[in-house]
Image (cartoon, rainbow over all chains, first blue to last red; front, side, top):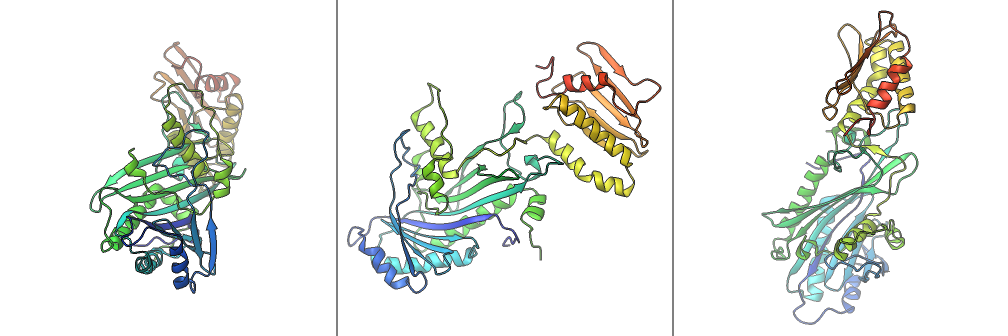
Length: 251
Length: 184
């Protein structure tokens, strides 16, 4: 059952694939251009992306600049959907307002057909589904604020430490089987205002390096990832948050 | 956390400017933390845009219980299960006590069948120490304090006060903060 809200906290949803080496030729920067020619009707805006990204598999030494991963972005006319293409990489991002899971997945799969036709990757190295949420909760001066009212996942503290917190980050990974994946959950405080407490909840479902899905099983793997994220999302918040903060639509 | 578990790169399109700025730069003076662990934390904080909240928030069930009760105050008064005087007396005591002890723990609160508003400070990590009070519908306060460790017992006399006495307030403030006097 899809969750529907009048005020969804979703900031960005994305799914993507990193490919195993191409068979016929090594990856080159002609590939994005060829892809663009075939999807430009739907994604007419071109951008280059040079932002710093953090490939967390390789820890960055303190003080060193994180390496950049360059890629091209093809953006829909309403700028809500972004196709990203880089070396052995294809991803589709859905910004607010969210496309909806089915359309996001199908967009990736549709473009993947085109990409495979152009680049002939030999297989999938890794794939991922990720949902990034920003939850904003007003501070009520008269009744104060306690995390339990809104979240079912809470930071822990040693005994004897005051239970009043200003900053926290929780990063947890668990393993799933059938289909195999790592589920990553990241919950922390983020940029707030004086009247609003803001939190990021980031859910990512990543394939195991040892057992990535095949092209044929990718659709099912992505759906499983989405279902697991949805389950985790629903369990992250109290009924009051679903009802009053996100204004869940029940039908 | 093995590298195999975290091999997908950050493809999100949000917050890149914030990430560039570095939302938080921990001043790490530990000598035993590995560079890898520090780098992971730093990377996570930047990607997440980790920031402090504008004010501290509570993460304990005592607070949740207290705030849930506060949320119902207006409705209870409107329904007649509590009098406006009981409500204002409780809030006044809370404000005065918090002014003396900002980290005062939240009491268990409830309204009895006979209309008494009960509030008690009694915690499993403070064995032998309890402060309780009943606020009657006209605002009269019947209070009691006991600390077994110091063999201290005090409470209201026959004539119930309409305002919590300074002595009682002092017991509350000194005995039930997050780091109260005599606590371990």
